[in-house]
Image 1 (tube, one colour):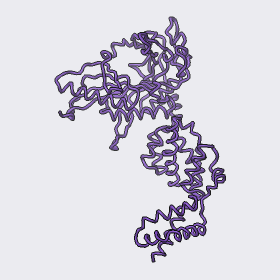
Image 2: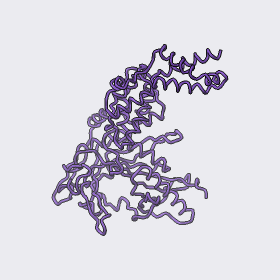
Image 3: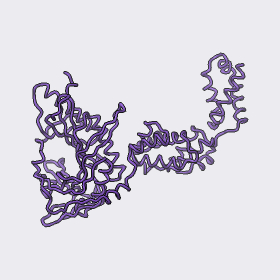
Image 4: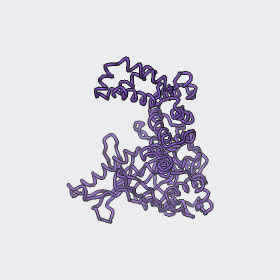
Length: 487
């Protein structure tokens, strides 16, 4: 079968839960993990006669996201009622935006594995309130927790520009990085802070008409989105090739079996009977408000990555790892700002320590970098001690481990443990002479051409100096002595 005769057409709808303290239209807390049905009031419970009041912070967050994704911020937008009936929606409708959203016509840029860049267009970003949560694993009963009901969301709707599971994964990575850098969402898919639905269809390459689409739900990680899309693309391909047709329906993805299965027939916009919410006035945004928000925008991840490559001369790989999470990038920059000797080599040393030692410990202990016990200033000082010749990189590992254990400063650890590097040329020369005299057979073999024994001599000298000999000085003196013996 010719798999290349078709192409996938994918659009993603990402729901991003906003980090506001209160809900969209009332003063209830948005704190995650509180007892069920404790973050509720008559407004979010949909009691008769109550009136919603819009959270201004949500509007500002929407503007921030719109600016970060190259959208046009509309000066006039309205809220609508999206009507559907479900146990976790007490009003019988959701307040959302549809025909006149707050942000339109943006794009997000991704970079694929082959280095090519692609723009994924955005149809709109709109504000809405979240529904509650139905809990179906309680025997024959379904329980409802309405704590999440009314929590502010931004829905980010892409154009059908995505062509593979890989592109979807990269796009979602960019969305998550942007919302976390802006500080408007924590990006936690496990807690439901970032949720994704995917619309997917396939068509013959060169065709302009869209095929029949399905919607995939129940995806709780970026990798699961990629896997689910690949499975559904294959399923649709096999259906069409066998002479069958694709049904327009909503599917659930089962990560354990790597399968999709039908959930219900797919709804269309007219099924929701959208109409303007009569209890809410239009949202009017002037240029001054937009410019005020723009002035507070942070440096975004792709901009920061490019700056690291330009300003610190870091490789692209390092820059991508360091800027993937804002907190990690902040930690790295604090180290760099604290360095006495600001050189490209020192910037790379800082990068290596963050990517290997720091992130290793963070991952092993399952903590955030803000909880990591070694402060950036301590790592700055340790790197300075290396570059000043006070300690070697090998001894620095011992300093790092002790800082992690005790929290003491690098200087006090070096003094307390006697880790100061031996950089006296005459002292190192004496040890070199002693090692060579103690190993005449190995010296003879080296002179005879077995130059791999150089590493043996280095190891023996390091043993005698308890690892304190300045490595460069040691290598230079040893090389000079052996060359003289050769000649």
